[in-house]
Every structure is written in C-alpha cells, then in structure tokens.
Length: 192
Image (cartoon, rainbow, N blue to C red; front, top):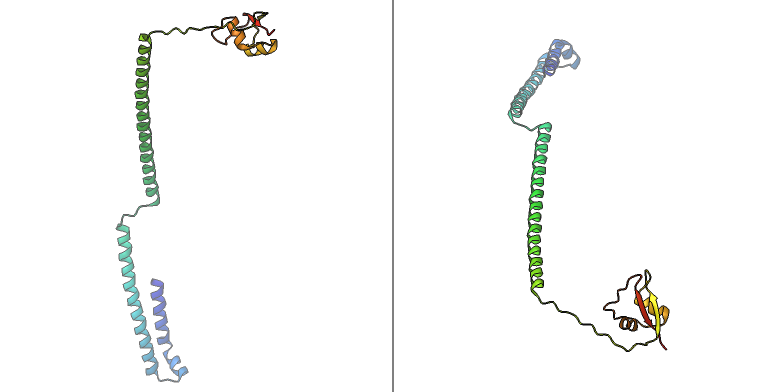
C-alpha cells in the first residue's frame, strides 16, 4: 500500500517539476496545464481515499475472521476419529446384545426340547410293551444246503448265488429280520 502511495505522489510531483517544459511542449498556457494537473491530483486523491476505505473494511473483516472459531483440519480429523470410536463401541455393544439374545433363545429352546424328551421318555416307560409276534411259513422247499455267512453277505446275495429266495431262507431259519452276521450258519432251501 505504501509503495502505491509513494508511486502516486511521485507521479503527481513529476509533472509539477516539469511544468514549464510541459507547457512549452504542449503549446498550452501554464494555467491550463496546471488545471489539468489539479484535476489529475483530485482524481488520485479520490482513488487513495477509496482505497483507504477498502483497506479499513478488509482490516475489520480480517479481525472478524480471526475472532471466529473455525475448525482446523486437524481438529476435524480428531472429531472424526472420536466419532468412529463411538460408532465402533456402539457396534460392539449391539453385537454383544444380539449374541446375548440369541444365546438366551437357544437356552430356552434347549430347555423346551429337554422337557419334551423327558416327557416322551416318561410316557414310553409307562406304556405297556407290545411283543411283536412273528409267524413263519413252511411253504419253502425242504431240501437245500447249509451255508456259513461271510463278511459282506446279505440274504438277497446268498439267495441269488445259490438259486433260492429271501423269504424261503428267512422262514427256514426263523429269522425276525434280514440282519445276518459273518460266521452264522444258515439253511438255504433250493428249488427242486
């Protein structure tokens, strides 16, 4: 700002010092040149006053900005870190609450299932045992061969290999199921 004022003053003084030369060169009377210079000085004075008003306004604005509490980037980052921490703690708290709810529900279902199992067990204990009576038929051929069961054998396989039928083998040996064991002796009826 000072440079501008100094430059403006020098610009004004130069024509005054050179006034006789300017009047002689322009061919105008000295009074006319002097009047033009005064008009220029007045215009410069108005410009300087306007600039002074603008500078004062800028200084007031600058002071107002200094007094305003602006958030710096580092402060903003700190606030964001705090919020992230709160969010993570809240999320962890929510997870714990959900896990607790699920655990409670699983425990409730386990108790309910245990009660149902116990009730079923008591009802079975008190129920009369029904003995299943198996009847066998004698409609199988009476001639056949003895066979010792090997590992991997089944009634169906034995019947196929020896030309018999599963129901004949079951009836001839009085079997209550198709379960057989290695080393077991069976009579295998053969078709005539």
